[in-house]
Image (cartoon, rainbow, N blue to C red; front, side):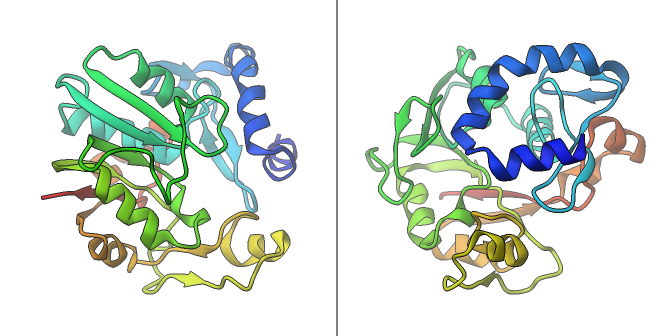
Length: 255
């Protein structure tokens, strides 16, 4: 299973992976249903989660039903337990939306939910994060997860997200981070996919973010919070939900 997962991640283009997963998920769920792990996004239990990773694979990381990872489930639990996201009326922008989030959020009657991406075949709007086709101060909430590490001019992308967020708005902007890394490691001269895999953890990444990621967000105008939400759960719950203890949830606000 590890070899198959790694092959799919590294050899199949992302748009094709998305299309393949849409028809494959119901079959996968039937095979993995059980009672050891629980995915809060679909409310189903599983006998195991799948391994995941472009390089070294993490055990019990990928939910068979929603294809959610640890960071997605942490984000969902945060939204569910700590916000009024599922109750109050909001206009939401979701950049490069995760499939199960898109399916779920699109059906919520309290949300005016707009998904956008340059390449995904399942979004509402084809859009470049460096030049978003939206008016200033358009959205109450913005989600943009694991996108900025693909963008060389991440400062411009952050400023665009800030521009289209309403005053008083907030968002979750997750990126791959090394908590032990004080300064972000990036080198735009590294363009070979194998070298990017070696240096940045994935063939199409251009950096590893360090803890100065929050300074970059502040430079764009945001107020920021580094939330270790998984630490709110017991060891048993962390295992059950398939969370990572030191996964940071980067929350931004616009005054």
